Image (cartoon, rainbow, N blue to C red; front, side, top):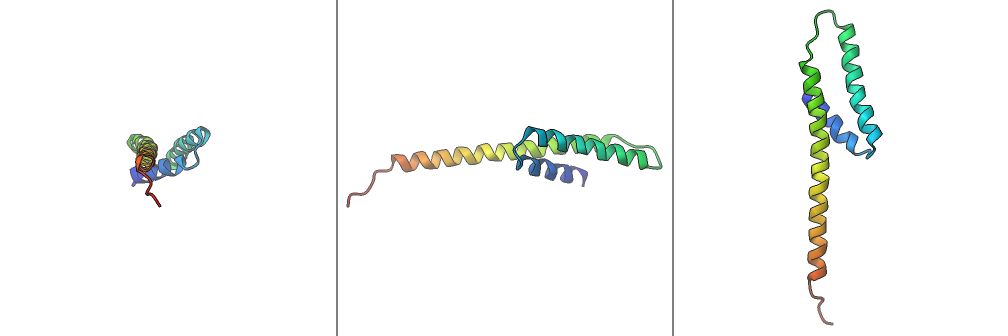
Length: 89
């Protein structure tokens, strides 16, 4: 669940299209984990934090990759329309 939540945060952060937002969301993940560790009664494992950071980065990478694929498809589609002969009327 941690990985899916972090992945979703990474995807949604890319919609803001600001490097400051990327860094702020990443820092907020660390702050929330730190707050949960301070409030926790027992020992804290750092594996969920590692999974959250990996999921966050994977979400950003997936969004950027999908933007690149969409742009490439849009470019290919516009080039194929430009090469198509116009019908005579």
